Image (cartoon, rainbow, N blue to C red):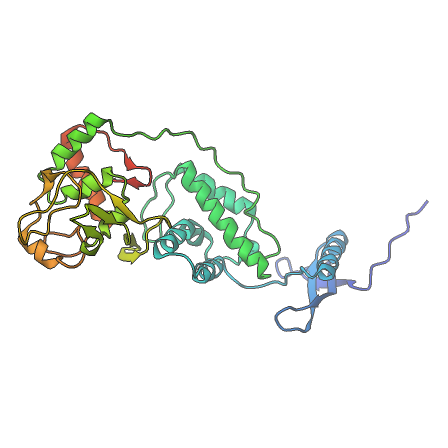
Length: 350
């Protein structure tokens, strides 16, 4: 019994076209279907595409019709991966400068590899390949440098950031689906948090006693974050009450020092230590409630330069950001034979 051929729907038409590669005439199926109302222009939009097989054309017609009915149809766009990422970063108005710099850092691998590609062509396989390369190391930065292998936490953060970017693009109707939301996270091993013993703390303070920024180490061991130490101002120090008001945070964002409110909403006044006191008349290096071992290590020129501003400054009186303190610690710790670990839960002097 001869099989009966199904009639093509009115939206699909069988045509013959010239294949530019082979120069031969081939059969194609032209699809012309209504995709509903364009949300941006308010006008009706029509889809015109060509497929190699009838089955592919019928499948596309069913998908377009269903999406148009639900109002989720996404037309083809030329938005690139770079453009979508940059617009997403620019739209995060509530982010601090440091968080925005971290967001840019997390998206750099994606932009460097697929930045000029249309975002609608981005697939899950692209993200999986990039995840594997970041774990293995050896990828190139925009400046031509070679990246070291990323850890599981950093790679998972990268995947989460890409997922947020594509989710935002999906809400705007730029992409039809979020290809990153189904990328499997990388396994992360459990890491215990090391702390100094009381004897190691005394060793560290003794080693830092002669340093000009000994008080910064003492404050770090009291639980202050690096940004809170770098942002500490004379106006926040009460020598008589031996208290510090944690009211400012100074961090490094994109190579520039940025000041804003403390990271914790509950930051406020805190007593630090029980020793110390007022220094000699006119000596503003006395610190509220910290051991006297480091007192007097700040030069007179520095004290005059930052008399009314920040407590932690360079030798020439310029306000210090948190990054130099990290580099300074790597020079001080080797002589103490102490391990390089966190000084508090949210501060790492590295």
